[in-house]
Length: 291
Length: 285
Image (tube, rainbow over all chains, first blue to last red; front, side):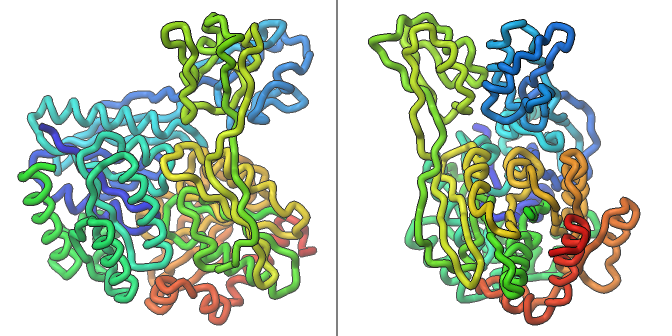
């Protein structure tokens, strides 16, 4: 059975992508999926060679046919998203594509047109196949795009007889994160020993629990604040979440990023060793012995 | 004047800059409000530590069907773009999490069998401390849609001379909602490949929204000019720069980075405030 390992954090900037890139270089026979479609960064390290590009149509936008419009203002009156102002021009950034204006236009002057919201890609990389995407600027429907990526990653895994998909998720607890977590096999939460890191860990863990997915925690830069690291460990004990790794602060992590490499490929310093140890634990406890 | 603080990449220091700037204005006795628009992971009050005076339920409208009036015609299901109301065995079923509150079903029902009822999606905390008014949204766990809650948070304290919107990471709809209508956008970034890549996206967003913006470099290190060079090439003002020190990281981890920034980098905060004032008001605030 194919297993889908998702990396999340709640808080942004806690090290999801650095950990995901490390796993990419450590794991064998897997598919990578960058589901942080809003601000994707994994490609900067993995350097994919795109073999297929697809248009993502997330929804529709309203278009007013000027020749048919009688300037009655009904559309502006009914729009709940303030997308049609007094001048009866559609602000496509605000338009949610609900189609209410088109349905109630007495002159039938409004058409809903499919809207290109981004692109997604299938790529070859030195670490194996990868799917990733680029949501257009100021676009919505990120959850839908995440769902497409996960589905395609699974198909590629089946085609290649790979049993593992590694997913880099997005920060927060909203639409794209929910689309990433539902139905996955296991979540690794990367957190940091800061007041905000702990707060956000608790929220994202509640979300993961809500969807009844198993998880483990990894503390990044654990030595920046031992007291807070202990607090995370206590929270994990209380909730029965395994603490899978503690990564020390290591300048090599940033240096590896600047060099466009995973920390594993760049250095055998303390952060690299800690991530390796964590990976072997995931392999042993999650991937081979089942979830 | 409304100032949005955003970044593209998460963890670059948005909340620290938002807090420090709010505190800077408050010290100058300028009436200031700090609005936490990162409703998925709200962190402002972890640092501000206001005693919350009031909690307001944040709601959205969803349809409720009166079964005795419904004839099962299915028009509600047809108009709903989000498949939030579907007909099952002739009876409409509302999938409330999918609903975008557009009102289509309510308007189209020929029997007037649909009314709109409130559904809670989160809360808004209100408080005030050290001259800073605070409103912070907190989306309920499992709730997908944050923009309606962000919109509600932004309704608070319109009377304040300065309002600061601490925005979520990314460049999609929650960020758009936070930044929309603001007079100036501060993008906080760091001189790493991830920081720079996401700054490019955020700058594109600012341009698409036609909001004047500038960059604050965080975790700057001597000899690393990638962020400076990018700003120069793109003619984006680099407003201020805060260095990468372990001290700030340690202070941040404990939740008291703001006092440290105010103490050591008050001139950088002044640069941000002066720049915004010049850009927006010709220098009057």
